Length: 408
Image (tube, rainbow, N blue to C red; front, top):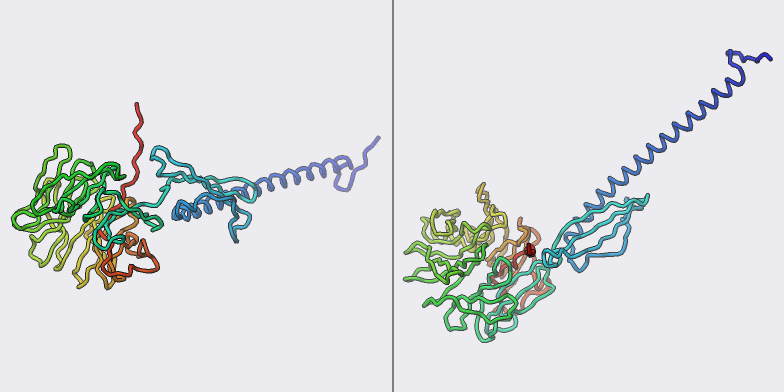
């Protein structure tokens, strides 16, 4: 039987087959396109989830530890359809003082993007001396950097003045100055107060300004000799005392570099009037000054990376906090208040500086960023101390937690 042909020469069957193949090609192309579009949409959602996760993690890193951990919550417009949740777990090798943040961001299609980070499990803590609970004696206290927890330190005596706390590198011991023996001497004890303080110096006129070395073996301090303040080293392993100052000039305020090989200090042995900040090797050699301005330049402190020193200076007519970069020599003024700002100390992560100031009347502890921003009092953000005779001063940070040592 002959086949009828259409005008183009194809039979009806061939035409139907061609149309069917064209239809299938369109279906296949549509499926491929939809898959590509879907994968593109999924990838876009993944990329946006990663963006949202990193932004949210930055927020979580700044929150108090007590506010971490939450039920799933949605993101606000223009990111509706995305959600997030966070959980925490202690990092045992750091004695639980560090935690792991587990942040999960859920996309509209139900996929999850997970981001993990380590952070402090609780706010950094600061030791200082104050007479806030006794107008007669100076005592040691510990306060969280957010000001939510203030605790007295047990020093086994209430009828003496305790000042200038400095903690060992692992935070287990504290050295401080006390006049419980009638003269101001150095004492050491466990930081938890489980044992009474032990006197380790016996200078005739007393001592001041102790600083514990990063390796934990030495305590630098200041004592008078022949009418001049001099820097000494107390070696804990041998109970020996070593003088490293130059004679016939005043030197003081020792501060260790992070590696423990250099000491910042204050000296009067310059051509400028007042005192200057200097650097020297830990044995007292290779001395040089890093400030040259007239006035009082004192209370130096190293940043954790050893690149910057903060200090107090009256070079502009008032006592303010300055920083100097040891590599570039760049000098920055960090405070500008009508009060007396002093004793700046970098936090363990180098992002925050604690200092004392009487800008609101009595001398109080303040915090600011390493760049001098966000200056605020720690303990009483709303109302200052009412009595001008009360004070909070000589702060030092509790060292960061160290990894546990494992047997084997």
